[in-house]
Image 1 (cartoon, rainbow, N blue to C red):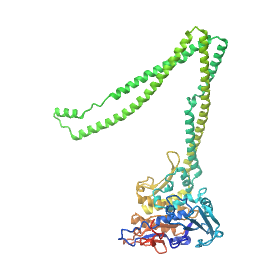
Image 2: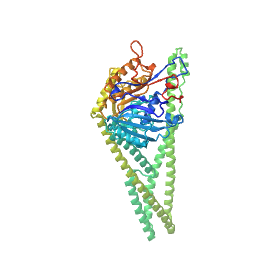
Image 3: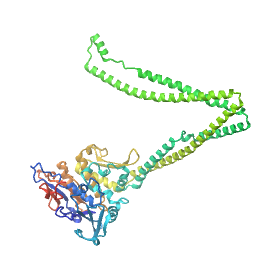
Image 4: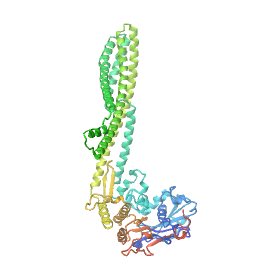
Amino acid sequence: MQISRLYSNRDEVFTPIEFNFGEDATCLNAVLGEIRHPSDDARDSHNLGKTTLLHLIDFLMLKGMSQGHFLFKNKNLFEGFEFFIEIALNSGQFATVRRGVDDPNLVSLALHDEPKESFIDVSEDGWDHFELSRGDAVVILDSWLDLRILKPFTYRKAITYFLRAQSDWDDELKLQKFASSKDQTWKPFIARLFAFNDQLVQQKYSLDEEYSEQKAKLDHLQGEVQFSEDQLPQLNAQISSLIQDIRSSEEALDAFSFDEEEKKLVRDLVNEIETEISAISSSLYNLRFDIRQIDEALSHKDKFDLNDVKSIFEEVELHFPEQLSRDYEQLVAFNRKITRERNTALRKQRTNLEDKRLALSERKRELDAQRSHRLQFMQATDTFEKFKELQKGLAEHKARLVYLEEQKRKLEFVAEAARDLREVERTRGRVADELKVMIERANPLFERFRDTFNAYCKRVLNHDGIVYFRVNKQNNFDYEVGLSLQGSSTTTSNLSDGTSYQKLICVLFDLALLKVYEDAPFFRFVYHDGVFEGLDNRKKNSLLAVIREQIASAKCQYIFTLIDTDLPRDLEDKPIRFSDEEVVARLHDDGRDGRLFKMAEF
């Protein structure tokens, strides 16, 4: 797929652009901005439309409209405009896309055998698909482009890699349009682009989401129950014991015989209440001890005084060096910092211990009350009073049984959610292992890309180009791209942190990708905005040599923008100018006729 022509229904405002494509793609496609008035500070060569042309092509390749798009922001200026792009398909045919500014959601498509056909005044019958919605038009155009390498993704997912605006030079693979997106929206596509299993990559992200959802569900369910999953058998035992107690109490009440109930109260008093009170008392003692220890630690103050040390030196008539004074001051400052951090942690610990102490004290008061009440019951001689107390106890037991059975029901949901979570975790671990195996396995296409990218980096940047895929800390598919340190072919340097080198790495990355796919049903063009801007002249010439070598086969159409002050220069420091055939659009700072759109600045 290459771009053959760009035009509109307003030639007087937008001059048609004829690109070098097909056999003519051995020529460059330069969009050149010329500075014709270098001494006029009021003029500017950076607002002529070089980047705007890229956005216009993306618009005609059916990008969704946003409020930041130049056609949206300046809709009043472009009212009535219709734009057309003619695309040379890999099949040998041509596709023309028409999209207007007034209603950019209506797109017309035509398939034809010869280039340079004008569709400006063509009626509805002359279009294969007339005024489709943008979404439907993307589907049709995707089928015509037939970039089967990308399936199941459409051409829209990949096209921005070959329409690189200046905002896309920051990362080889994470474009600006992905900046605020989750990794799962674009990394599976990257896997596909380099012949890895994109479905496996997507599955891992889906499992991560499912794990988070199941974990949130488990936490929510667990918050509604007072028991943990592993206490379910214990809860069942409590319910069974409570049911027996209720039956026993009911039988005692029916028979008006309370001996067994009194014995049970004694057992409960000894086995349960007294035991718990004893344990709480022991815990309270330990808590009070720990709190006292913390209080003592917090009351301790640093007593080191540098002036006292200086006085001692003076008394024995010894010199106290300034450096030693500074060392002491730094030591004191460090000690104070450590003390502040320790005191903060101690205060937090004290608060937690005090909260536990208050909770245990309250529980102890409840147990003391229960013990007192049961002792009174056993000492009572009035049978009717005992009858009423047992009825009251029976009601409490039944209420407790209802509560425990409800807790059991909820806990069973917790146990089920926990099992589901463990199952997702097991599956996620298995898929992570499969990802590692996939990345380590031989991948012929990626190996060709890696070798090509490395060769380009050596020629242009005099460093090995390093690119590899890996599994990151979250066990997800990830990548590393950069330049090696001198003398090492495996360790990445910080060279790519610089703007110029990062841009060059992106350019070479794109060229290498197009090179390995040059005989496949794939994109066969790239548009690089401002490619030579800010580069060392030696790098410009090295890069230009690589570009000319790659386009010599006519399998790669190279479109780029630059201003004449960024032209590569020869050994005599003279600009290396491109031929008229290689300059497909010549813009300049001599009034509106020099702009992409011959109108006032916008």
